[in-house]
Length: 323
Image 1 (cartoon, rainbow, N blue to C red):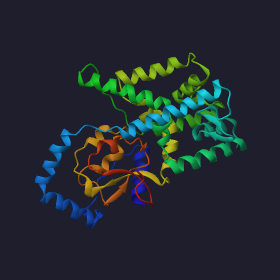
Image 2: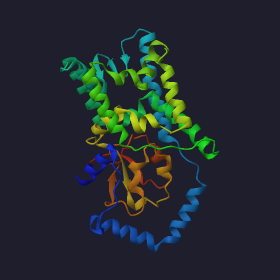
Image 3: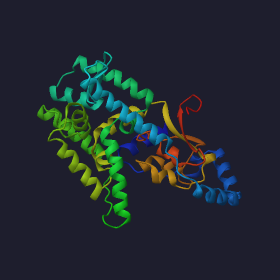
Image 4: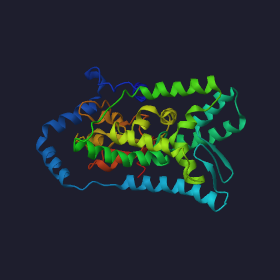
């Protein structure tokens, strides 16, 4: 329960906490750390071997393939006029089942100031889907803006390395503030302000129905992320990620961390799209032998690909290793 609470607070913007006292760390973790201290030569040998290995992209490639396939299915359903996946990411129907984005449904009901039955049906379907798959997996496995932002991040990092631009960071709690702001605006104005600004909806509709002037706003966001602050929209603004993160707190599908297999190289944190969720991999931070990453984890799999020893794995809680 304590880990769940801390993970939830970190998602809202709090900084990850170090263990307050040695008693919070289990005896088995102490034993594993002691074995590692006594076998430094083996660890050094492993680090040299790890440095020679080529990075894997297994989960990244799977994720990109799924993301492209889902968005392409929307496009083909519309252009071929087949009733498979109708609508857009904010609201759709898959072979007759209504699917409504949780955040979009909340915005609409607040703007109209009453509960809309059809929206409730669609949100229950989506809620159950992402509870099974893992809350914020929507962000990395479905969202088209996430893919563009992931690609522009690579450009940003190149520019930073060449000292052409400087990386600027904001407090992660800003996303919580924006979530509340969009909620208040929807209720006070009777208008879904966020849906007008959301690059997720703009890109989804543009792919399906054709481009429009709203794409200029998406371009502005991407340029801001290239030249000022990488992944700024996803990390500091987008309330969709926070909404699905709440769902992720109860999801059985997760990336889990296994202390005994970790050599604390830090490659996972360098690859992670939300690196604070991997704070547990820092030496001395883990309190249990096996720990699930926090609800802000997007289940992107980049850390799983980056870890050469299998310390990070996709698992379903209560079951054996998924893959």
